[in-house]
Length: 270
View 1 (cartoon, rainbow, N blue to C red):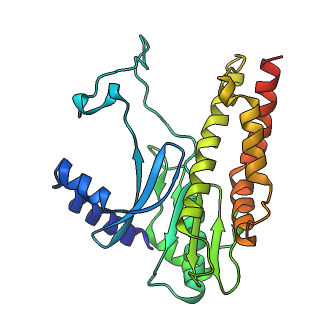
View 2: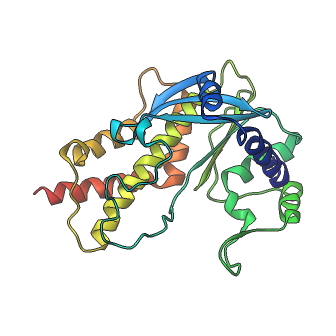
Protein backbone atom coordinates (compact mmCIF):
# COMPACT_ATOMS: atom_id res chain seq x y z
CA UNK A 1 0.00 0.00 0.00
CA UNK A 2 1.42 3.39 -0.98
CA UNK A 3 1.75 6.17 1.56
CA UNK A 4 -1.16 8.02 -0.07
CA UNK A 5 -3.41 4.97 0.08
CA UNK A 6 -2.36 4.34 3.68
CA UNK A 7 -3.28 7.91 4.69
CA UNK A 8 -6.59 7.68 2.82
CA UNK A 9 -7.50 4.45 4.63
CA UNK A 10 -6.53 5.99 7.98
CA UNK A 11 -8.70 9.05 7.29
CA UNK A 12 -11.66 6.89 6.26
CA UNK A 13 -11.41 4.78 9.43
CA UNK A 14 -11.08 7.87 11.63
CA UNK A 15 -14.06 9.57 9.98
CA UNK A 16 -16.16 6.42 10.40
CA UNK A 17 -15.34 5.99 14.10
CA UNK A 18 -15.45 9.65 15.19
CA UNK A 19 -19.26 10.11 15.32
CA UNK A 20 -19.95 6.82 17.15
CA UNK A 21 -21.23 6.87 20.72
CA UNK A 22 -19.67 4.76 23.48
CA UNK A 23 -22.48 2.22 23.09
CA UNK A 24 -22.03 2.06 19.31
CA UNK A 25 -18.28 1.54 19.73
CA UNK A 26 -18.96 -1.21 22.26
CA UNK A 27 -21.33 -2.96 19.85
CA UNK A 28 -18.76 -2.67 17.06
CA UNK A 29 -16.04 -4.22 19.22
CA UNK A 30 -18.40 -6.96 20.46
CA UNK A 31 -19.06 -7.93 16.84
CA UNK A 32 -15.33 -8.21 16.03
CA UNK A 33 -13.90 -11.63 15.15
CA UNK A 34 -11.78 -13.00 18.04
CA UNK A 35 -8.24 -13.92 16.96
CA UNK A 36 -6.65 -14.87 20.27
CA UNK A 37 -5.38 -13.60 23.58
CA UNK A 38 -1.96 -12.45 24.71
CA UNK A 39 -0.19 -9.98 26.94
CA UNK A 40 -2.71 -7.55 28.41
CA UNK A 41 -5.94 -9.05 27.10
CA UNK A 42 -7.87 -10.50 24.17
CA UNK A 43 -7.47 -9.41 20.56
CA UNK A 44 -9.95 -9.30 17.70
CA UNK A 45 -10.31 -8.18 14.10
CA UNK A 46 -13.05 -5.97 12.69
CA UNK A 47 -13.65 -4.04 9.49
CA UNK A 48 -14.16 -0.28 9.45
CA UNK A 49 -14.79 1.61 6.21
CA UNK A 50 -13.54 -1.40 4.27
CA UNK A 51 -10.26 -1.57 6.21
CA UNK A 52 -9.28 -4.42 8.61
CA UNK A 53 -8.67 -3.02 12.11
CA UNK A 54 -6.85 -4.87 14.89
CA UNK A 55 -8.49 -4.46 18.32
CA UNK A 56 -6.89 -5.09 21.72
CA UNK A 57 -9.27 -5.40 24.67
CA UNK A 58 -7.65 -4.35 27.95
CA UNK A 59 -9.64 -4.88 31.15
CA UNK A 60 -9.90 -2.00 33.62
CA UNK A 61 -9.57 -2.41 37.35
CA UNK A 62 -12.26 -1.05 39.68
CA UNK A 63 -10.02 1.91 40.37
CA UNK A 64 -10.06 2.86 36.69
CA UNK A 65 -13.59 1.66 35.98
CA UNK A 66 -16.86 3.20 34.86
CA UNK A 67 -17.09 5.66 37.74
CA UNK A 68 -14.03 7.40 36.34
CA UNK A 69 -15.04 7.31 32.70
CA UNK A 70 -13.01 9.80 30.62
CA UNK A 71 -11.13 10.93 33.72
CA UNK A 72 -7.51 12.05 33.28
CA UNK A 73 -6.78 11.99 37.00
CA UNK A 74 -3.34 10.73 38.05
CA UNK A 75 -4.85 7.78 39.95
CA UNK A 76 -1.59 5.98 40.65
CA UNK A 77 0.63 9.01 41.26
CA UNK A 78 2.91 7.76 38.54
CA UNK A 79 4.58 11.14 38.14
CA UNK A 80 4.99 12.03 41.84
CA UNK A 81 6.52 15.48 42.24
CA UNK A 82 8.60 15.23 39.10
CA UNK A 83 7.63 17.33 36.04
CA UNK A 84 5.72 15.51 33.32
CA UNK A 85 7.82 14.14 30.48
CA UNK A 86 6.63 13.22 27.03
CA UNK A 87 6.94 9.49 26.37
CA UNK A 88 9.27 8.80 23.45
CA UNK A 89 9.08 5.15 22.36
CA UNK A 90 12.48 3.87 21.30
CA UNK A 91 11.21 0.81 19.51
CA UNK A 92 7.92 0.05 17.78
CA UNK A 93 7.53 -3.21 15.86
CA UNK A 94 4.78 -2.79 13.26
CA UNK A 95 2.91 -5.68 11.67
CA UNK A 96 1.33 -5.59 8.21
CA UNK A 97 -1.03 -8.33 7.02
CA UNK A 98 -1.72 -7.92 3.29
CA UNK A 99 -4.88 -9.37 1.77
CA UNK A 100 -4.81 -7.46 -1.53
CA UNK A 101 -2.71 -4.89 -3.34
CA UNK A 102 -2.75 -2.84 -6.56
CA UNK A 103 0.83 -4.05 -7.05
CA UNK A 104 1.63 -7.34 -8.77
CA UNK A 105 4.68 -9.47 -9.46
CA UNK A 106 8.02 -8.02 -8.42
CA UNK A 107 6.45 -4.70 -7.34
CA UNK A 108 4.25 -6.56 -4.87
CA UNK A 109 7.30 -8.29 -3.40
CA UNK A 110 9.19 -4.99 -3.16
CA UNK A 111 6.16 -3.38 -1.48
CA UNK A 112 6.29 -6.07 1.21
CA UNK A 113 9.99 -5.40 1.70
CA UNK A 114 9.32 -1.67 2.09
CA UNK A 115 6.69 -2.33 4.75
CA UNK A 116 9.18 -4.36 6.77
CA UNK A 117 11.81 -1.60 6.57
CA UNK A 118 9.97 1.75 6.56
CA UNK A 119 13.16 3.61 7.56
CA UNK A 120 14.25 3.71 3.91
CA UNK A 121 11.35 6.13 3.29
CA UNK A 122 12.28 8.48 6.15
CA UNK A 123 14.64 11.45 6.19
CA UNK A 124 16.19 11.24 9.67
CA UNK A 125 18.26 14.37 9.13
CA UNK A 126 15.30 16.64 8.40
CA UNK A 127 14.95 19.89 10.30
CA UNK A 128 12.59 19.36 13.21
CA UNK A 129 13.10 15.60 13.32
CA UNK A 130 12.50 12.59 11.06
CA UNK A 131 10.12 13.27 8.17
CA UNK A 132 8.72 11.18 5.27
CA UNK A 133 10.65 11.37 2.04
CA UNK A 134 8.96 12.52 -1.13
CA UNK A 135 6.62 9.96 -2.69
CA UNK A 136 8.88 9.73 -5.72
CA UNK A 137 11.44 7.85 -3.58
CA UNK A 138 8.93 5.08 -2.91
CA UNK A 139 7.96 4.89 -6.59
CA UNK A 140 11.63 4.70 -7.57
CA UNK A 141 12.28 1.84 -5.14
CA UNK A 142 9.23 -0.03 -6.42
CA UNK A 143 10.63 0.25 -9.92
CA UNK A 144 14.29 -0.50 -9.26
CA UNK A 145 14.01 -2.87 -6.28
CA UNK A 146 15.10 -2.92 -2.65
CA UNK A 147 17.91 -5.12 -1.37
CA UNK A 148 18.40 -4.18 2.27
CA UNK A 149 20.85 -6.14 4.47
CA UNK A 150 18.53 -5.99 7.49
CA UNK A 151 15.59 -7.70 5.77
CA UNK A 152 15.08 -11.41 6.50
CA UNK A 153 12.62 -13.49 4.48
CA UNK A 154 10.46 -16.08 6.20
CA UNK A 155 8.02 -16.94 3.43
CA UNK A 156 7.59 -20.37 1.84
CA UNK A 157 7.44 -20.65 -1.95
CA UNK A 158 3.87 -21.16 -3.13
CA UNK A 159 2.47 -20.68 0.37
CA UNK A 160 3.32 -17.18 1.56
CA UNK A 161 5.59 -14.18 1.30
CA UNK A 162 6.93 -12.74 4.53
CA UNK A 163 9.67 -10.31 5.52
CA UNK A 164 10.98 -9.10 8.86
CA UNK A 165 13.03 -5.96 9.41
CA UNK A 166 14.25 -3.96 12.39
CA UNK A 167 10.91 -2.24 12.93
CA UNK A 168 8.41 -4.03 10.72
CA UNK A 169 6.96 -7.39 9.76
CA UNK A 170 4.97 -7.88 6.55
CA UNK A 171 3.13 -10.99 5.43
CA UNK A 172 0.92 -12.05 2.54
CA UNK A 173 -0.73 -15.47 2.28
CA UNK A 174 -0.63 -17.07 -1.15
CA UNK A 175 -2.29 -20.28 0.01
CA UNK A 176 -4.42 -19.24 3.05
CA UNK A 177 -5.19 -22.81 4.13
CA UNK A 178 -1.46 -23.58 4.44
CA UNK A 179 -0.07 -20.24 5.56
CA UNK A 180 0.31 -18.69 9.01
CA UNK A 181 -2.75 -17.10 10.59
CA UNK A 182 -2.98 -13.49 11.67
CA UNK A 183 -3.19 -14.78 15.25
CA UNK A 184 0.24 -16.44 14.85
CA UNK A 185 1.81 -13.19 13.67
CA UNK A 186 0.09 -10.88 16.16
CA UNK A 187 0.98 -13.13 19.11
CA UNK A 188 4.67 -13.16 18.14
CA UNK A 189 4.76 -9.42 17.39
CA UNK A 190 3.15 -8.43 20.72
CA UNK A 191 5.42 -10.74 22.70
CA UNK A 192 8.58 -9.42 21.05
CA UNK A 193 7.47 -5.79 21.47
CA UNK A 194 6.66 -6.26 25.17
CA UNK A 195 9.89 -8.12 25.98
CA UNK A 196 11.98 -5.61 24.04
CA UNK A 197 10.55 -2.76 26.16
CA UNK A 198 11.01 -4.80 29.36
CA UNK A 199 14.65 -5.57 28.65
CA UNK A 200 15.24 -1.95 27.61
CA UNK A 201 14.01 -0.83 31.03
CA UNK A 202 16.53 -3.13 32.71
CA UNK A 203 19.28 -1.81 30.44
CA UNK A 204 18.32 1.77 31.32
CA UNK A 205 18.57 1.06 35.05
CA UNK A 206 22.06 -0.37 34.55
CA UNK A 207 23.19 2.60 32.48
CA UNK A 208 21.83 4.95 35.15
CA UNK A 209 24.15 3.28 37.66
CA UNK A 210 21.44 1.32 39.47
CA UNK A 211 21.12 -2.37 40.32
CA UNK A 212 18.08 -3.63 38.38
CA UNK A 213 15.41 -5.16 40.60
CA UNK A 214 12.19 -6.85 39.50
CA UNK A 215 9.46 -8.82 41.29
CA UNK A 216 10.50 -12.47 41.52
CA UNK A 217 7.71 -13.41 39.14
CA UNK A 218 9.43 -11.35 36.43
CA UNK A 219 13.02 -11.99 37.44
CA UNK A 220 15.81 -13.77 35.60
CA UNK A 221 13.94 -17.09 35.54
CA UNK A 222 11.06 -15.38 33.71
CA UNK A 223 13.50 -14.09 31.10
CA UNK A 224 15.18 -17.48 30.83
CA UNK A 225 11.78 -19.06 30.13
CA UNK A 226 10.92 -16.36 27.57
CA UNK A 227 14.25 -16.88 25.79
CA UNK A 228 13.66 -20.63 25.61
CA UNK A 229 10.13 -20.26 24.25
CA UNK A 230 11.20 -17.84 21.54
CA UNK A 231 14.36 -19.62 20.40
CA UNK A 232 13.51 -23.32 20.70
CA UNK A 233 11.37 -25.18 18.17
CA UNK A 234 8.40 -27.20 19.43
CA UNK A 235 7.69 -30.77 18.41
CA UNK A 236 4.44 -29.89 16.59
CA UNK A 237 5.56 -26.49 15.35
CA UNK A 238 5.56 -26.02 11.58
CA UNK A 239 8.56 -24.87 9.58
CA UNK A 240 6.74 -21.60 8.88
CA UNK A 241 6.38 -20.88 12.59
CA UNK A 242 10.08 -21.51 13.10
CA UNK A 243 11.07 -19.30 10.18
CA UNK A 244 8.82 -16.47 11.38
CA UNK A 245 10.14 -16.62 14.93
CA UNK A 246 13.79 -16.83 13.87
CA UNK A 247 13.42 -13.92 11.44
CA UNK A 248 11.74 -11.62 13.96
CA UNK A 249 14.15 -12.54 16.75
CA UNK A 250 17.15 -11.90 14.49
CA UNK A 251 16.02 -8.54 13.11
CA UNK A 252 14.76 -7.19 16.45
CA UNK A 253 17.94 -8.11 18.31
CA UNK A 254 15.80 -9.43 21.17
CA UNK A 255 17.80 -12.63 21.79
CA UNK A 256 20.90 -10.67 22.85
CA UNK A 257 18.81 -8.34 24.99
CA UNK A 258 17.14 -11.24 26.79
CA UNK A 259 20.49 -12.83 27.63
CA UNK A 260 21.98 -9.54 28.87
CA UNK A 261 18.91 -8.71 31.00
CA UNK A 262 18.83 -12.24 32.41
CA UNK A 263 22.48 -12.02 33.45
CA UNK A 264 21.95 -8.58 35.03
CA UNK A 265 18.96 -9.70 37.10
CA UNK A 266 20.75 -12.86 38.20
CA UNK A 267 23.72 -10.79 39.42
CA UNK A 268 21.44 -8.40 41.30
CA UNK A 269 20.03 -11.21 43.47
CA UNK A 270 23.46 -12.59 44.26
